[in-house]
Image 1: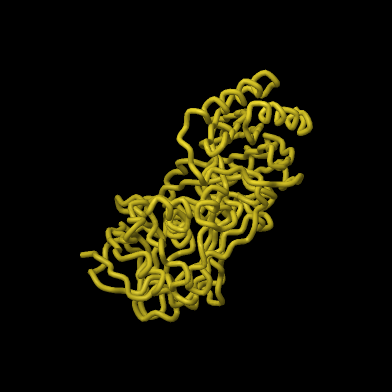
Image 2: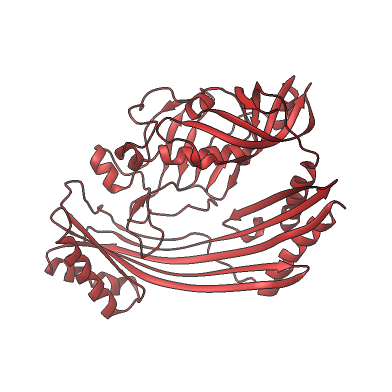
Length: 439
């Protein structure tokens, strides 16, 4: 079905007394896993669907179908209108105005399946041979996906685009003196050529081996170096409290703090739907609003939140192009695109050199339990003890506790080593004076 054909259904919506938005997607994905140098599993999937929102006065209805045909679209449109007529009115319900746009974001290249398998086998082989203490590679995998979207509405939205991503991960297991440690590495990119399978194997093995011999430290308050992967995980929690939807639901610790200091002056947080090569980059969001670069926290000051059309209408601002769907079966939510902490000027090595005693955190457990309203957290953690500017030994069996705003406010150095972990990224951060509970 072509965009011109899809537009023809909009007149039917008008005849039914509704404004309407029609979202059509086609997708395909692949996942393969190798074990002991051989293909263990290969899974290919195809998907398609149509999702329709219908607005009757201030009542919004939604319906979807997994079949994309003239008959199914007509039936789904009628169902969406019928659903609208029995839902409660909301004065902030809206379908955004738009204009025709067309684009493509680094489409899926045709890579022979044999090459993909060999690359994953290479990652597994490199991990196994990295160190004699690597006893097993539990998993070495690769995946890719592509989707094609058409979106039209009675309000002028006309969008057509294709997007894709590639990912790979390795899980290695090391053992020494009866102690076992796991190391995980992964990458998610828009360009296949940017996946370095050899590096993934080495990284997973190194993470596992480097933690052998880990034991707790004494309870004390220490400066922490948050590895960039951990900093990105912290940012993923902050993503929820930076959502206008969370603010409206009164589930954000940043509510009522616009214009106030919420972090160190060294911290700037950006959501960028136009980032070159970003996993979540696109020309428009999932309701046809152009994506943009939105500075959420600027030098520690909260500037605002990210919005879809509904939250923007409700809060009297403009959508930031953050309307998202999980597919045609889903109505529009509010989510980040490429979210990251702006890098600074300091290397991780310089941070380590600056500490007489500290802790570099490379793993945390339970971050999802951080309270989104108070910001309080208590996390199991692992990493490395730093003494006299040197990494002394691995550490495990400790807990770090505090408050997210307090943690952000205590950032004293921001690394220059920004890395995107999928659609969320961060550099290494040095945070002063956090409580660590150990022996």
